[in-house]
Image: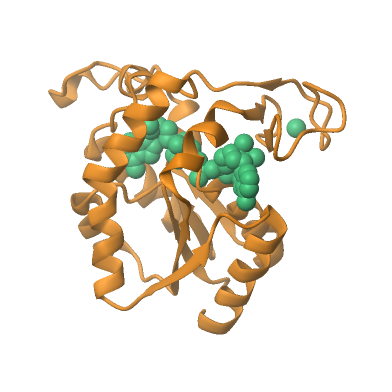
Length: 215
Ligand code: ADP
Ligand code: ADP
Ligand code: ZN
C-alpha cells in the first residue's frame, strides 16, 4: 500500500519543516519541500522566464515568491517520483493551488495555526544543520552542544533569509498570497486545524492523530 499524500500548511515559522520530518519518519513518505529544493538550486539560471530576477536567490533573499513556473516544475517532478509524500512550502498562492489540483490527489490537508507575534522569534532563532537539514531553535529546541547537530555532528547555521527584516516581508507575502489558499481548502472541507503553539511533541501528537484518522 502506498503512503498517504499529506499537505502541510502554515505561516513561515509555524513548524511545517519540524512536523514534516516526523511525518516522513512515521509514515514512510517523501518530504517534498520547495524551500529546500530552491535553496539547493539558488543560482539556477531562470533569465529565459522573463521574470523580475535572473536567479531564485534574488527572490528568496528579498522574501518574495519565486515564479510559479519554477516551483510548479519542481513539485510536479517530485510528486511523480514519490510513493506517498508530505508537501511543505507549496502551494503559496491560488495559482499554485490550482496547478496542484491538476497533478495529484491529496488525502489530508493539515494547517498549523500560530499567532503572528510568535513567528518572528521562531524564525530569527532558527538554526539549521548544513549536513542533514535538521531544525533547531536557540531557545525552544536547542541542540545539546551549541552550534552542533545532535543527529549528525554537522554545523548549525542561520538561513540568509531568517533576518528580522526579511522575516517581516515573508509574513506579509504570506498574508497576501497564502492565506487565501488556506481559506480555499477550508471551504472545500479538506482542512484539519492543529494548534501549532503547543510544544513540538504536543503538536506532533495532534498531527499524527489527524493523519491516522483522515488519511
Ligand atoms: P516552517 O518550516 O513552518 O518555517 P520550522 O519547522 O522550520 O517552521 O520551525 C521554525 C522554528 O521554530 C525552528 O527554529 C523550530 O525549531 C521552531 N519550532 C518548531 N515547532 C515549534 C513549536 N511547537 N514550539 C516552539 N518552536 C518551534
Ligand atoms: P519557511 O521556512 O519560511 O516556510 P521556505 O523554506 O518554505 O520558508 O521558503 C523560503 C523561500 O523560498 C521563500 O521565501 C520563497 O522565496 C521561496 N519559496 C519556497 N516555496 C515557494 C513556493 N511554493 N513558491 C514561491 N516561492 C517559494
Ligand atoms: Zn545534522
